[in-house]
Image 1 (tube, rainbow, N blue to C red):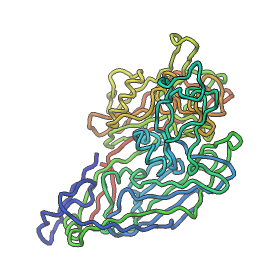
Image 2: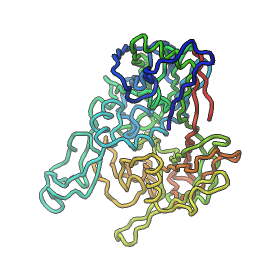
Image 3: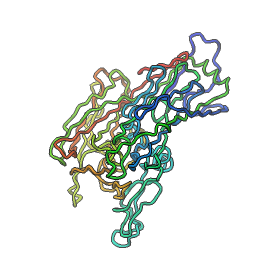
Image 4: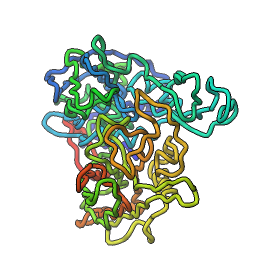
Length: 502
C-alpha cells in the first residue's frame, strides 16, 4: 500500500495554496487542469548484449507507463518468448537509480514477473499483452468440433482447456480438438532469418514504486538512470520452436533498444506552487528483496522423493514486511519448455487408468516470524494454498487447476509451436518438452500482524512430497526463490532524493 505525505518547509516563504492538486500521486485530480505530454525517444547511454543504461531528462513529471522497447536479432533458429512472461524474460535485474543511490531494484526480475503475470485477465492478455509484451496465457474451452465425424467428435462438448491467441488450431482430417492439432503463434512473435520480434516493457512493471507514484523530475537535481541486466543469451531468453534449435543463442538487437519517455506538464503556476509546497516530499512504496536456495533431489532417474522439512530464512530482519512470494523452478528446464525457466514447479502425481487410484503429491507450507507461525496448522491443501495467494494479492490468478496444482487432466493436447500444452515432465525422464501443467504452483503469504520483523527474520517452512528426479542421473537440482515485500520510503528534499526502509 502506497501513501504520500507532504511536509511543509521549515521556513516557508508564504502560505501554501489550498487548491494545488497532488501531481505525483497516481489517481484523479480534483480540479479541471490542462495537461500536456511531451514524448522523448531516448537511446541508451551504455548498451551491450548483457547490460544497458538509460538516463532520463530532469523535466516535467515522468509517466509511470513509459516504455522500453526491446528487439531480438534475426536468427536462423526459430524461437519465441516464454508464454507467461513474454519479453520480460530478457531482464535478469533492473535498477532505478538517482545519482549514486538505488531507489528500487529487483533481482531475478524475469522470475518475479512470472508470478505477477498470473493476475492479468484473459482478455487483457489476448487483446493487449500479446501485442505489447508477448504474454499470451489466455485460456478458452477447446470444443471437439474438429473435421472428424465419429467417435469423440461433438459440437457441444468441451472437456479440455487451452491457450487462446485469437486464431483457430490447425487440425487434420481425422483429428478432434481434444487430443490433436497445432497452434502457431503469430508471425511477429517468433524469430527467423529476416525478422526479430519487438515488444515493450513498462517502467511500472520494472519498478513497483511507479505503480502508485510518478517521478517529479523537474524537482530533482540529480541524474535519474534506469539500468537493465540481461539474462544469458544461451537457453535463458527464448523457447526454441524446434527440437533442432535447443541450446541456441538468441542475441538482442542492440541498435533497436529505446526508452519512450512521456513527460507530463501542468500549467506553470501549478507546478511551481506544487514544488514550493512540497520542498520536503515523502513517498511510501513496496520494494522486493530476493533470496534463493538450491533444493537437491537424489535417487534413481524418474523417481520422486520428499525433500523433507526445510526451514529457510528469507530475510526481512528489522524491516516492516507485508508479503512473501515463493516459487520452485527446475534448473535444467529452459528452452525446451513453453515457459522456459520462469515457472513454479509443484509436487509430482501418479495417475493411472482408474481415477480412484490417482494420487497427487503434497506441499506442506508455513511461515514463521516474530516467534509465531503465520498459520496455526501447516497448510497442505492446494485449494487453501491457492486461497492464500488470492488473499495476498486481492485477486484470483487466471490459471487452471491443472496448471496450478497438477490436479485433474483438463489441459488440451494441442501443441503450441510444436510443444504439447499438456506435456508433463513427471515420473519419467523427459528432456524434450514441458507444457503448461504443474508450472504455476506459486505460493504467497500475507503477513497480517502489521509488525516489524525482529532480528531473526522471516523463516519459510516447506516440504515438497514428492519432487521428481528428472535429470537422467542420480540427482536433480531445483531453485527455491523467495521475494519479501518490504515497506520503503523515498524522500525528496530540496531536489535531492534518498530512500530508506521504513
